[in-house]
Length: 531
Ligand code: KIV
Ligand code: ZN
Image (cartoon, rainbow, N blue to C red):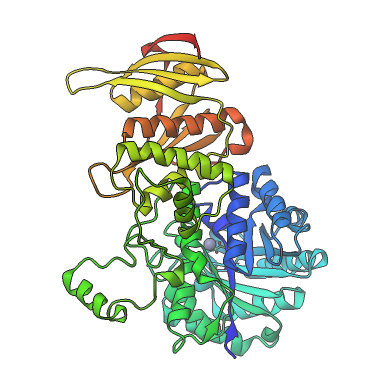
């Protein structure tokens, strides 16, 4: 029987640390539930001591998922280990993940400790963690630049002190496959009690070798891979979950191992991450990118028609890429629309289907051919809208040109009243967002703004993703429309509603690509009207 490889997902810890990937509590829980459906063995839900928000989300995820191990990271400090345990103790299967750097460069410059002092710290921390919880992972940070003899001493000591998993991270993404194979073999051959622990790989992608190195580790005897959806993580990221899993599934001749991953959930999981964070999946991304199964050249298309195996080493269906072969249009009814949603993998309550159907009908008035991608964009734009609809768009007029200052006049509705705001700016989006700010009377700055076409054609839907900040927190919103100004206003309103709805919708961090603050000097009128 093929040996099992444990998939340890750190999307919500190492991944979430990366700029632009911050999530709020509700989003993290949604992501964790999808990871559970995907079939990962362990979710690293966060770094409990790092902030009250992280603690709260680790604790909430621990209670939200079942049949899965939930881990929290902890430095080799009592207060970290206590926080980690407090946060995960409600999980069906809790794990404390303790780490300590082991390379001389980290010991000397970062920890200012000798090897012996670090050994003692490790022993003390692992023993303490084990006194709280039976499942302890110990990571030797910067393992791939650690002296191998010292590594073996630490590993043996950690297992004696109670560690059940030993993680050997390539923290800086420096190692080659040969280095990894040598390191794992050395630990397996020289550490007398190594049979009492599982060896884990945690590879960063600075040289683009994270997946290859993780697989090299497995070939040498590691039985756990730490990875993230789409390979997100510190700097160049971690090994991508979908790539390590599909490599093993597609090449059992090289990797005769099995995982619990339901590969048909890979595409949906990656899309959920993208929907939640507003970060697009790179089109050429292996396994889950839009082009991963697209065959553009004539020669390839010809081969595919003759036999898909000519150019496809795995099927799109095996990773959950769904394509339907019927088109909806303005004459399609709600029944057909629901069937399309289901075929695309969205099983939604009646109320949401009704809301989406009305958005679909509006779209039909503006766009002739409604593609699957359009429908997915509609779903994603509402999936994000768990916020209360405090403000909604009634109408807007924007004037813009290359020889004039742009002006926007917007009507927004709140309860049963319509409010009008007029503002100017250096461009139409700027003017529109200032008018929104003027109406809601709540200052915010624009932290990030992305606009892109959902499909190729001239009448394509535009999708805007907006991140705003009220100074304390960042809020994300998404809007789609055939009109990019409308998409931008809708995205802004979605973020505004989350901001006004309170803390639970806020995300920490966020990109600082664009920062404009809507100072009051150029704001113009504001009037209230009865709806
Ligand atoms: O890259 C790394 O070394 C880590 C550890 C904390 C496991 O993320
Ligand atoms: Zn890492």
